[in-house]
Length: 135
Image 1 (spheres, rainbow, N blue to C red):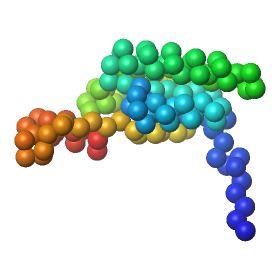
Image 2: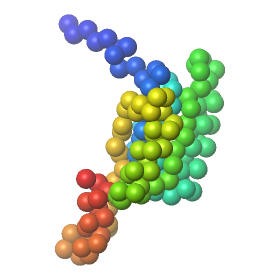
Image 3: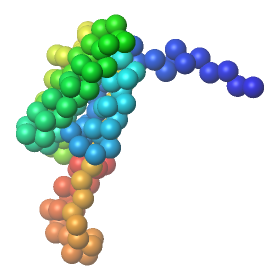
């Protein structure tokens, strides 16, 4: 019999960053994280429009869950291009400013992109963008 201490996996009082969280799998991860009661969820998206919509949806879910929760989860985020050094630096600084004591506890590195062409049809610029974003 294996005993697992679930407190070990608790997200209570943790600050979480989820990249690519405005849609798809990343948004699903953010929804699931809300149920685990972290102190803060930070999401990032490539566009301000997608970011804004995702934060509104997550806040709506968060508010609906508050009936049986102690403290609301703080949700924030920023739009940035993490395929660039400037975008990554801005995101790190944003996390430093928004996490307690500048401490990020959990990173879900979900962001990814694709060009809907075969690799032989991709331009060198498209291939480089894929590699900078996904790797």
